[in-house]
Amino acid sequence: MTLVEIPASDRTDIAALVNAYAYAVDAREAATVSTLFTNDGVLMVPSAPERLTPTRELVGRAEIEAELAQLDAFVVTSHAITGHHLSAYDGDTARGVTRCEAHHISRSRRDDSLRDLVWILRYADDYRRTAAGWLFERREITIDVVDRRTIHDATPRKAARSRDTER
Image (cartoon, rainbow, N blue to C red; front, side, top):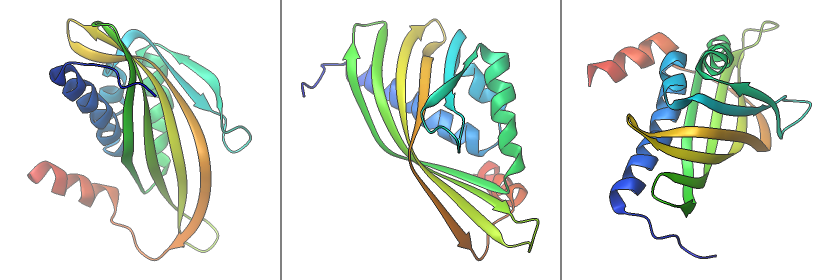
């Protein structure tokens, strides 16, 4: 594997983009997430649980925003970036892989217990430098591992959001 020479400022800006995506997803800010993509950006998502590889193509900010609004069905989500590697760079475009552990907490309708659907994710990312800074041009989500857990407690989303905004 060859390490790609990338100016530190671009590495920092692209890493900030990746982290902004994870934060906005967990904050249920689908409109913000969509602005992290170019106008004609593409988000490829799996059709879980049937297919764990990217199968559905969402093109443009409106489609991306609509898809991510579905996360409102969860009590809490938590996306932790576990790795980020840039593999190509030419000054105005870059390519990379982001790894993430994503927790999706829901309440069972049957017995009101809390469940954690854990996905170990891999994002194949194409980035583009724009007048607004680095944005996703294409992001393909693959689910590498699925784990289901019963949990004992979860902070309601509203309380978690209010603490984030107090800082």
